[in-house]
Structures are given as structure tokens and as C-alpha cells.
Image 1 (spheres, rainbow, N blue to C red):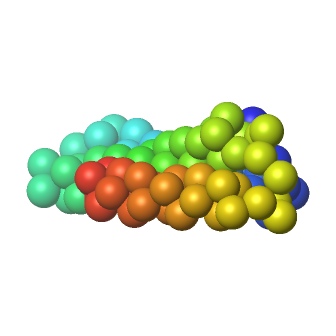
Image 2: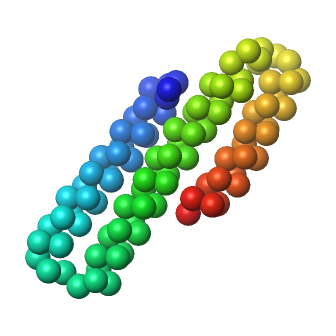
Length: 95
């Protein structure tokens, strides 16, 4: 679950962007737009969806793996660092 109001706001913003892109793609298909332009819109939608997935996945990791850790312990810092490392790899893959 998205934990903070800021995380929720970012997710909703991304989702609205995806919705707008889907509507634009629908209109472009109806207007018989060329395949090159359609592919560009699809790539943009995929990027937005992957960005949303990365945000939700990071929130899930932090909730799942950090929930029984106390912020003052060294272990909690290690978990945060490991999550950061995993998310860096995933974000690269999802681009």
C-alpha cells in the first residue's frame, strides 16, 4: 500500500497520465494515424506504466521488508540500502 500522501499523489498523477495517453492513443487509432506515431504513444504509455509499477513495488518492498525494523538500528539502514539497490536495478530494467 502506498504509505504517504506524497506517494499516493505521485501514483495518482502517473495513473492520470497513463489514462490521458490511452485516450490519445484511442483517438489516434480512430483517426487512422500512422503506425510510427502510434508506436511512439504506446512506448510512452509503457514507460508511464513501468514508472507506476516501480513506485508501487518500492513502497511494497519498504513495507514488507522494513516493517519490523526500528529506524534507530543498523539493520534498518541495511534493509533500506538493499531496497535502494534492488530498485535501482529494477528501474533500469523497466525503462
